[in-house]
Length: 341
Image 1: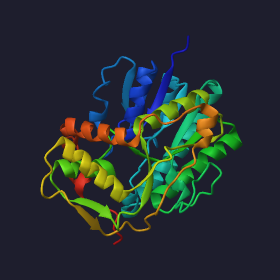
Image 2: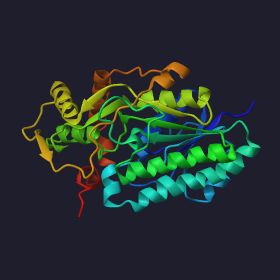
Image 3: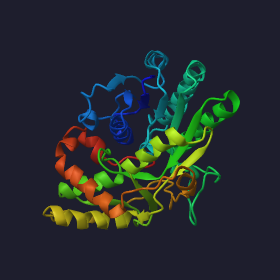
Image 4: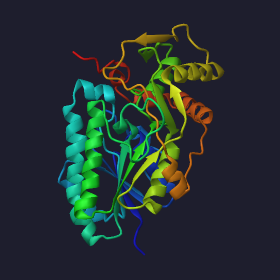
């Protein structure tokens, strides 16, 4: 019987580490490829780092080393989550987003194009974002919606999606592309909204909110996203795009007020914990919203965790894992980036 081995790129990150945890529970073997950047964190893999079915390899997805890893471990699936992800950082310095999110994906595609011909059971799952669709002022974007990315980050992810799709069409590689809404949950770097607000509530600091806090995002609990990814790997149709979302939108201000209320139930809130409206992000999209009917209908998937349950679980995880914050460079968690110079 062939070993069920999966390669996850970017597995020291937020979604990648949660995905690996779930794959191991499903009795897959997992090789984690990660270049170990500022957002990588070995704290995210401490629960399973000694698991005999888990292996970590330090490697950039732009490296030729990826080919030897594929050939040695012979994965039946590759989940590509390695990416630069923070919009503000893409405004500060777009080049690394082009390098990782476009050229890195190109390198994986070139290697996988050769690899799958000798390993016909293998397939590539490329994980993308709802931000490729740009502002969705009304309604919800389905898989046929036009790409209109607003930030260098979103544009780099849109480019990678097009690259993967073109390799399916031109070279016949077995690949699937997923576009997910905003994730939240344990192990997320505190440069992102929810863990940053939780950090500041716990640390008695002001709560920075862009603009007037009216920007709306669709939120999904990370483990629900990971369940969807595995279902797409096991049952999804080659060459298809799948939106993954919760159909639940919240404004940034609603998120902030909700976390304050959760904080009040768990800790004594300090006097500095107040909402502070700050200068808006350049080119800030007003609203993202996905139509996820396709995955619900075709693959019988739906999110399990309600937003209130997920937010409680997330706050409690950070409260019970204060060492997570100390394992990071504090400047990466608290310094404002993304202002046009």
